[in-house]
Image 1 (cartoon, one colour):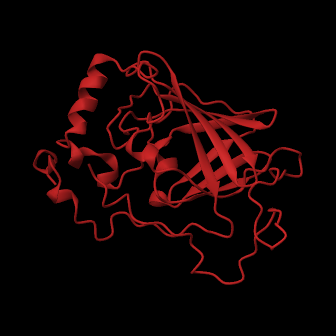
Image 2 (cartoon, helix red, strand yellow):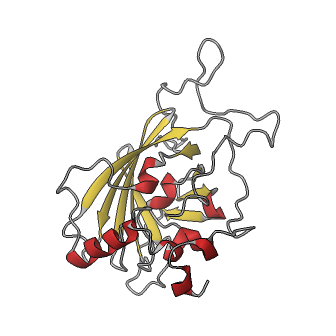
Length: 255
């Protein structure tokens, strides 16, 4: 599998700036951010999801790492393909090895942070990984049936009390859900439920519904950590990328 592009040590992007204000986070008696304080709220009373967040990279390797046997069942073709990908023979075909977007939900598990900017009509997610931007529209629009297939899909959201529910469809079916190689198809429908448990923790409950690859929908829960005072940096994946010609299967891709 390809890790040299992905598993690069991460440290919060503080060295680029001085005098970084840390807003909307309560402080402990010693002046440090209180990450266990109640979640802040936006002017409209909704939980404020804004901030720079970091996911757990164990899901980058296997998005189903926390599931028990039988909770996620693949169709025969998908299981066979996943088993092939586990051997590494398809490493050169892996989208991230080719600097292509990781897709959803995989992008949340890369070792790079993402920044949420929340407004009343949309939520923007600025990913350091691959320099990608995601728009989650809250204005009542709907996704049309003949969307142009995309790597990151098309997202609409709505509030269910204190939880932001996001539906994303319109994928191109080319992404891998993780480095293990769990596949997707163009029928993929991802539902995410964002809940800020407290000031320092953002829970995302993710349901994968892809009837062309999996017997039934399955759900995983990931928890993101707040990085107070951090910012996302520039990401240039293809700059000095020398891995691809040396990966298993590169001769089959013409790289």
